[in-house]
Image (cartoon, rainbow, N blue to C red; front, side, top):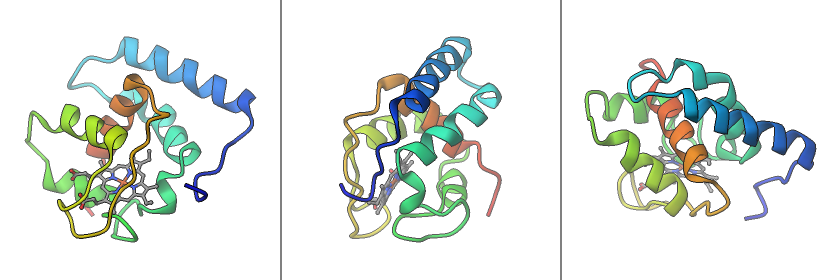
Length: 120
Ligand code: HEC
């Protein structure tokens, strides 16, 4: 996917270790500690090329996703799997490509961060 820019590895390694540390600290309902790390991950992995924080661009806005799944206890793990595996048909006909370069920890941190967005 040419839209996804590969940043130099110095930054990347910092992010990876941050994501790992954060995921170790993380217990299911408390995602607060992940915010900075997850936001940087989203930037680094090109999520924001397709997703607005609030409104639909190519994909749904992150706040819209959070709104849709508020109170859905299975959403964090389901979305983490979709972030890694890709998705189509939930919001429309546009495909979200899979992102196999993301580790489980990164996908979980990203899903938690998306779901923690306030209402649009
Ligand atoms: C090439 C554009 C594109 C990129 C890059 C992209 N997405 Fe998406 N994303 C989409 C589209 C389109 C959908 C809607 C898919 C559907 O309808 O099932 C979507 C859906 C989602 C959903 C909701 C899935 C659901 O079941 O409701 C989440 C969460 C998400 N993306 C997170 C991310 C994250 C995190 C990244 C970065 C790692 C990312 N996306 C990168 C286009 C993209």
